[in-house]
Length: 77
Image 1 (tube, rainbow, N blue to C red):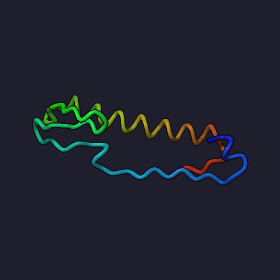
Image 2: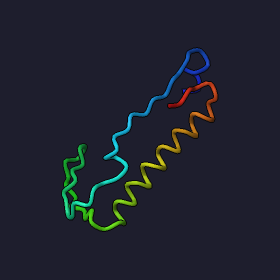
Image 3: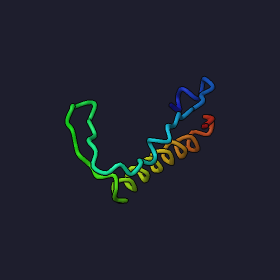
Image 4: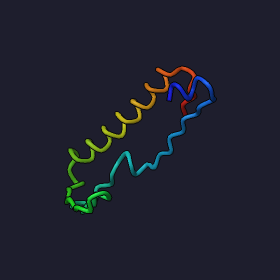
């Protein structure tokens, strides 16, 4: 991305769905892996799983922000 930014204007846009950062408390629900098709049952009523989802979302967002800072010629939104 840095090489691209040296010759071109690069703008990073992250589209966010609020459902990606926090799951509602629905009890035990099936989650399907789109790549393998396997189904895992998770309990969303307890905070541990929902917290892990929120933490992963926050971490990924921060990594993108740090990448944009590292490559100063990229505008990050």
